[in-house]
Amino acid sequence: MIRVKDIEKSLKFYQDTMGMTLITTKEFKEAAFNLYFLAYTAETGDIPQAMREGVLELTYNYGTEKDENFKYHNGNVEPQGFGHICVSVDNVEAACKRFDDLNVKWQKRLTDGKMRGIAFMRDPDDYWVEVIQHDMFKEKSEL
Image 1 (cartoon, helix red, strand yellow):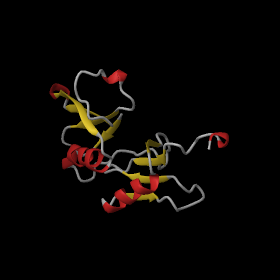
Image 2 (cartoon, one colour; image 1 turned 180 degrees about the horizontal axis):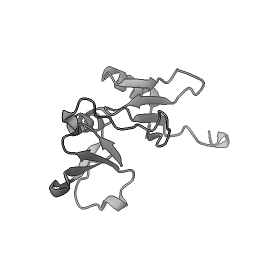
Image 3 (cartoon, rainbow, N blue to C red; image 1 turned 90 degrees about the horizontal axis):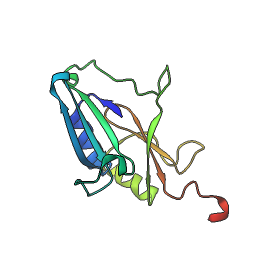
Image 4 (cartoon, helix red, strand yellow; image 1 turned 60 degrees about the vertical axis):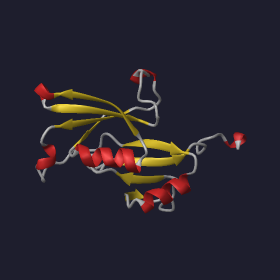
């Protein structure tokens, strides 16, 4: 679960940029927050969340988008804590080209630094999203 300041911006990023599908929304009006669950699936029906691979939960607290000074800690500035989420793709170069075309905010491009082949972008709340290729961590003997 990650907390988000502006749910519209976050849903746009995770749905339109990252290609996820909103599968469930739960409103807690009396407590002034909503939960949004996204996954990489076209199925939004009767599959229990606990049976899905990789569900991302966004928590939106009402009114945070109206405070221009409000910001969540992304875990990568002091004091460090939470690091990032990660998605794996079939073709990391093609995915990063698509993200470039969508004008994402990059933390680290594929060709930056010593760890080539791994990219990090930032979501609307500055959380880092790592992008790797599915077969990146295969044993050398399997390649």
